[in-house]
Amino acid sequence: PLSLLIMMVGGGIAGLKASEIAARRGHQVTLLEKESELGGILRYTAQDRHKTDIARYLKHMIQRLRDLGVDIRTNTTATPEMVKALGPDAVLAAIGGRERTLAIPGGEQAKTALACYFHPEQVGQTLVVIGGGLTGCETAIHWAEEGRDVTLLSRSAELLPRVEGDGQCVNTHLLLLHETGVRVVTDCPVTAIRSDQVETP
Image (cartoon, rainbow, N blue to C red; front, side, top):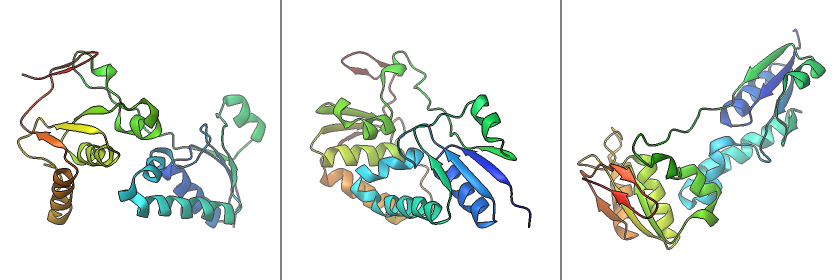
């Protein structure tokens, strides 16, 4: 079979899986990741005790690439010059999406859940988590377990409105929110974020 030289740009979960598939098909794979660690957004799971299964999966995925002989280069930003120098037969891009900011006055001041996981030193003692979906609930639980004073605001009348068909998941999250002392306010949209407060109607 034809063996190609493949450059994979991005070491998140998509880049890791695509690299594994290409390597198993007999291709030579060079993976470029601009950060110092592989895993992309899944790196946060190493900080959350409720995500140990995902963190373990990520660790095994990275080890599989090493066992397959994938050339992994972290702290490396792909440039046109680098692509030309390596001369790959194909370039695959798995660079992820862009994080959204809240479309309200001051929304750009809000830290994303991922930013808080990756930079815990920037997280204060008192937190307001905006959003009653899965990410919001899990973020609130995590920081409450870390000893923070957490309030969760949800514009919906119910928490986890999009988690369908998994009542156990919903019940577990609701129980953890209660046990960790998170203050939950539903039917409460946020209209603006100021330097020292969150505004609601």
